[in-house]
Amino acid sequence: MAAKVFISYAHEDAKVLERLHKHLAVLRRDGKISEWFDREILVGGVLDREITKSLDNSDIFLPIVSPDFLASNYCYEKEMARAMERHEAGQMRIVPIIAEPCEWLETPLKQFKAAPKDGTAISDWTNPNTAYLDIAGELRRLVEALDEGSSSKAEPSASSRKYKVKKGFDEIDKSEFRDKAFETMCSYFEGAAHEINSLDGVKARYRRISPDAFTARSKRTWSLPMPVQPCAMALVPMSLARASDASTMR
Image (cartoon, rainbow, N blue to C red; front, top):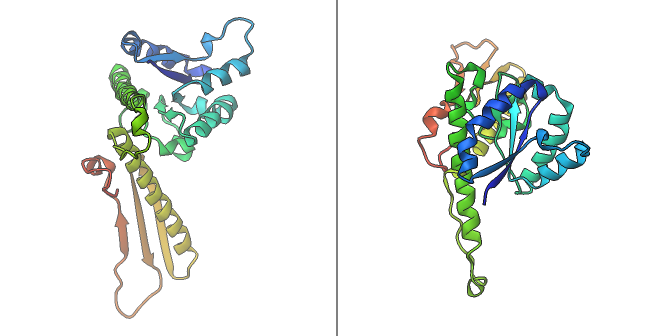
């Protein structure tokens, strides 16, 4: 069964939507996905009702993220907010598509693995078609993993209902585990830096330098008879950490 994909976008990003739609053509022909965006609403349709109905029936939420998307009250506060609710309920996957550089890392979208690769905005790629190809490839991996999961759930027999089956973790589950673990570490070090800064004689600084890396540093500020070396902490960029399994801390 084709995965239902809801595409959320600001109308200023219509050209990005059109290009993305073309690059997803093979996925549509293969029966892997069916897309929905507001252009599917027929004349006379009630906008809010049609959008909410489609969003609640979709498997994947694709927000085309840009400054215009973040500035849109409808996209951000209605469509994305509802998608987050369904994600928390385990009913929807969210895949941010980063169209242009913007402060998406300061939003709830920062917890999700974005496309194209490393969350690099499409507009920053030398050849945008390469970025769209990466997006299409990531979506293919996702829908195939979802299809495998739904197939395995449809097979239990009556005699097996009494038994518990150990859950397996695919690459998407492992990637999401690493992302959540990394965000937990980021929150911990950011909170620790704030707490240290409330103390006398000590300073700390936390800085998010990319979607996959941050730095944290602290030092004493008072004078002592003997020199004191500053204490520094830094996390390795995730490009190195991704080589490890889901249990590896970032």
